[in-house]
Image (tube, rainbow, N blue to C red; front, side, top):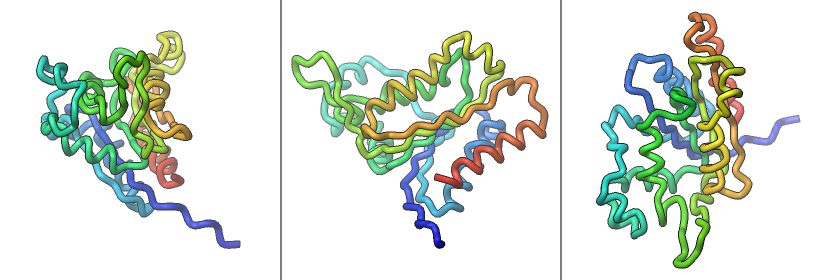
Length: 203
């Protein structure tokens, strides 16, 4: 029996690592290649590569509740978010969470009238990124799985619970993590790249 053909996805890959030759960058490259080979349409954002400004300035804060047209500095990022039906985040976990660069992207791009609405007089936001139906994190940890569990995995909860609530109600999530990177050898790294490639090939 011929299997049902997989639906092509529009995938936005967002990468945050300051070293272009890093293992994390190799993971980003492997993810993009695997997605494209599987026939998906891919857009990518390299936050360090484009010198994205992660600091939420006074002006940004003042315009946080306002029209998207008032935020030209993030216009392309907003367009990419609205275009995608799948989001892949590739980054190292530092101090139990994503790098400040990626956290700043959340602060500046996932704003009112982009990622959520905050109705006047309301106490709770309403998600707007209903187009995103799949959220995947590819990350590395210097420490082992047990230590991360003991620390509470704040970064994982922030993204797979917090950000996920702003996406489609049926949004699926996937956490692909390599632990103990500081003690990993080349074979360990190659096996993790294969895991990433295999997982994304099956989307």
